[in-house]
Length: 480
Image 1 (cartoon, rainbow, N blue to C red):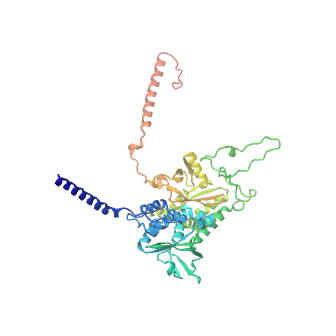
Image 2: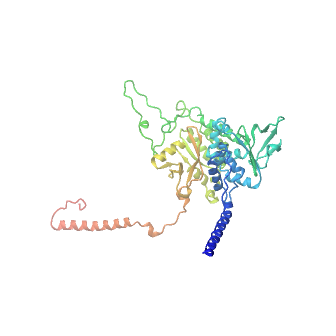
Image 3: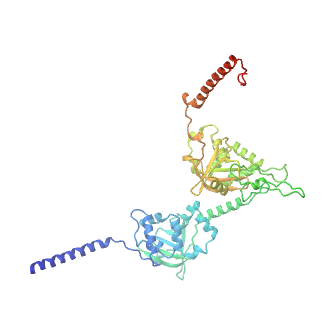
């Protein structure tokens, strides 16, 4: 009995040793959780999200990028995620050490101008937001112990000035460093600063957009009034005689539909005065140039003097226009064949002009209410089809469709300019005309109608002859 018992004990000891060796081998493969500055499990979730959003290899859990996303600088971390900069920062950390200047949360929540913050969060200003955030990152390691008092390039391409005081204080441009060496990692360092750093390019872009908004918001002298309920021009109410019951104008009682075109805009003063349409056209072309991204369309309008003159004449006579303006990227996709035919540029632009005054809100409300709206264009008889798609207004059908990209670029009560991301072409311009064969021109319904008429004529003739044989006068008008 001693030998079997000894063998069983020996086998049990070998099994325990094998299990311990397997456990030691599998232990280094477990993921290491990052050390969260604020504690809790939110940092782990954010770090995991950073690894998923990055490349296949991901970043090290001890990286300065993970520390930034998991630190108490939550406002800056949210802006980095909204600006889609995780991959860019991950590539920068992979190439060299970085120095990140992180503004405190109060500087982004309460101290920042609300109008400037709204400007940064608009989707069309994504490049400005990325430039602003990359201005806070230096492609080198500068801890507090070796603070260089000089100008250094940032990841945005612009230089930032670093300064050191006699009392040991440190400054970045016009912001003081409040928490030096707030986060230290092998691949970078994070310094806490008191305010947000704004590069010159972003400040100029913000000032230009704000001045354009102020110019577009001011109505010129003698501009017609627009009904805020219907977004259409107001018509003066007819005079009511004393003692007569109040009369409700038909235009106020009817619900605005897509087929109701607004009346021509009334001129300022009496009938002898008229709008200066040519000045208005020049003003809206200048606005396209200052707005940026629509230089191709502005060049075409400047070179085609006949088209600009026609637009000015229509506005001078009191009509209103809505211009669907393709941006430069859309105009660059036009082929030489589409522009080589005589009159092609004029026809393309005429198809982008609607003889109504429409804003982004009025178009979106119309497509939400009616589903599909057909707008008349100056290129008769073609119409532009608009529908609601992805929370915006989509014009056209199929591959030749365009989305409302930059709404309300220019609105003065008579000319409305809406930016789109593609050039619209009518259906007959998209598909080449194919010759129709001879058999296709014959409609089967017409052929059947002719046969039935022949049979009806023979039957009517036989009826009249039978009535004459019997000596009776037929009452049919066809026999008479």
